[in-house]
Image (tube, rainbow, N blue to C red; front, side):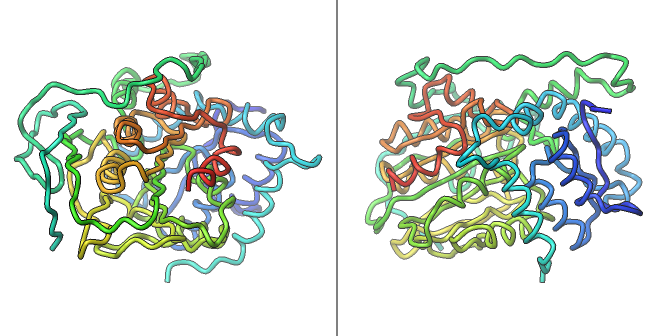
Length: 415
């Protein structure tokens, strides 16, 4: 039938949804939104589907309560509209950029993830001496402004937005993607598309159309911090789980730097995502915990519904996890991580921004480049949604604009 978008329940009577999705991606790749219940088995299967190329997921109404049905309806329609604009059919339908030694990497990835996924068991004070403060202001002020908080970076006062890292603008050769036309008959709904799209274009994570908060990052250098390695920070939104896995699989177990990842993902899925990555990669992968010191060769995944930043504790780079206001409509926010990495590691930072909608991570990537670090934006060729990396590249914030299958090699040259 070749639908524009598929909404797939993973619990079905004859063939389970994961088996069905595997066949769909083999025979006729289709943008798919996964319906998931909040249960260990369903959460794990949903993560496997995301790793195989599902566009996004949504929690079933039974998992969030009948009172939330209107929100579920609006969120589902928003995801379907975005999925219809994704490049899943082009990326998965053509192997021209992913053929090695006569074999399809796309097919290999699907088979590998499906095989190991069947056997998974599920879920079982900072002292800083600062120099002169440097502040870069991003985002727009929401109606509900918050009081100043110097540690988390939330500020009530309004200041002019400053741009960072603008050198090299316009040299990336980025071309605007052509958005497919959507028939009005195919999307009959009383929900206002204008309202939904307006929220999405402002930077929504899609999974939660939240009120944006003002974020004032602190780039003041930290004195006396013991920096003994480089650091790699990665940010992604829609389409990220599959791409993050592809990048991390290319690293050896002796990778000489810590890796911190912000993926826009519900807290329900974070542990399953980390476990899947840990099985797929040579590196150790874990959900980050507050206060732990950074160690080389470890991948730290930001917990859902919390921000993750790098700070200094006992003179060593450490992780701070905290509840805050959404930044760029997102929590966790990529910008929060990127700005903190730039502040602590300066020119020893490599930032990577991958597929996703909105602008989260864009200004943070610019800060990394401005302070001497290296930056990568995923190219349109392999992006499921080419928005975050497109904006970063167009602003000149990316040293390199690369398809996802070339990113790990560039990282290894820097690290």
